Picture 1 (spheres, rainbow, N blue to C red):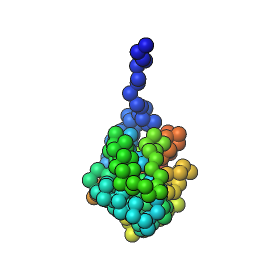
Picture 2 (picture 1 turned 90 degrees about the vertical axis):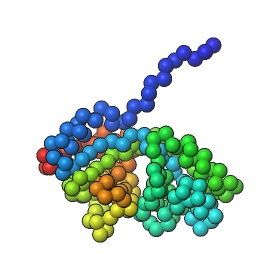
Picture 3 (picture 1 turned 30 degrees about the vertical axis):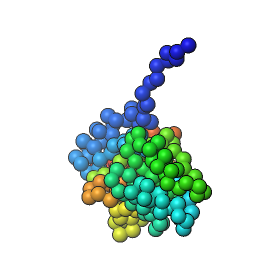
Picture 4 (picture 1 turned 135 degrees about the horizontal axis):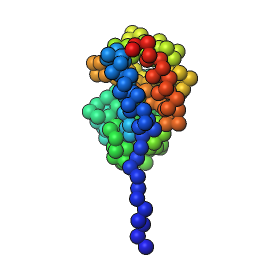
Amino acid sequence: MADTALTAPPRSPLSHYADRLAAATRTSQGAVRLAELPFLAQVNVRLDAKGGAADAVGLALGLQLPLEPNTAIRAGESTALWLGPDEWLVVGPPGSERDLETRIRAAVGEEPVSVTDVSAQRTTLLVSGPGARDLLAHGCALDLHPRAFGTGRCAQTTLGRTQVVLVARDEPGAGFWVLVRSSFAGYLTDWLLDAATEYV
């Protein structure tokens, strides 16, 4: 018997916040821009950074895995984030998770490696504009001054008491990615909207 059940299109954890995020951006007159970047591909990679697998993955992705702690490297539409001495998060455009995972697995061959699609685990908030650093500094213990956390930096930290991966984007004026677990995304978005009221 044929399966006739309809499959609903995926819905982002913050789809019902779209109007509020857009309104906050408008009322701050560009000082702070908030938006969700839903469904980014996110593939967690664990391997020995000193082995041949790291180079093989870099060649397969056209993107070297960063070896310096708390750095991010972008090439094309993909970004690799250093999460630990043997752990990275590869972020790509929506829908590319299967391709990223397949390319990584094919590249490493028999090398010991863990490759896990964690795309559904988190959503991404984009925080940009001239006031972005100040807004994030309200709830983050990291020193976010550009000398300490400039473009191309990333860190696992807390923001408004929520665990996040914070990324300083490497394009001029691109702001920050805040990767947050889907179950905490609403709480963190409410926190950001509240903290952004001083820019209105």
